[in-house]
Length: 367
Image (cartoon, rainbow, N blue to C red; front, side, top):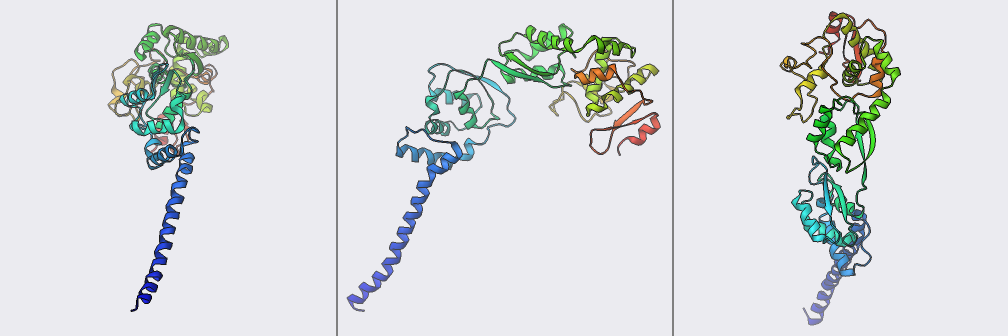
């Protein structure tokens, strides 16, 4: 082949290579230019003071490791108070977050701080953080210190220990053990009224217990107590029965009928046979991680306790939980019924089947 022919052939081969190179560069260029856009979609707008080189570098690192920063360290982790002092360097804060088990990726988090500009916005204060938060959520919290007043929600049917357990998770500076002792010593079990309270995170144990108990007294009116007396019970006994009704009922509308069953049993001298009293007597179940063991075993029903209402006649020594206003009213104004038994319906509706005789009751029990 002549030199001219060879040159022509090489030219024919070279053109596609040039085209391929151009396409490759274009493709790579489009990827590179899209990285900051993708980072902004995931992590929000970048610090406007970042220069182009830093913007691309930080964006690339964040996009490449997005899953690590948007996945919680430990979904089962509880809340804890994390203190940031005035002028505390971001690097020191990140290191302490890792030491306390709140984050797993300190270097990446430092990258995010620079990218977002949060490193220049961290404010001093006490923050309520948890490894159940993503690492992004944790550092974003540093822009807004937690308020001194926080919301404490007590759910109907919680026992004292459950309330105590949530206090440190919310950042309230009260030891669970001290709170429990205060409630027990002052006889306030059952009188910590359910609801949502705005409390100072530095509230004293005595003041918190007084606040909850005073709210209970405000709702446990003379009209309700008089209704309870008409059922042959003292107000203290009515509170105890209301706590059992609270734990037995799934649907609020069934509370007056459930109350009638227990009142019928008391009047006839029968044992109450209430499962929640067994659960209360058993205490905390380590394997189930709950104060209310479910299901109960035959051995559980033999627990030696004055709260075992299968073995002991009458009401237990005191409330087993903190009942709602609806449960208190159900005991004060129960339905009139002939029923002595009830069991959960088999359709998972939360309803119960009620019966007059033990034979009927046996037929209602789910297979």
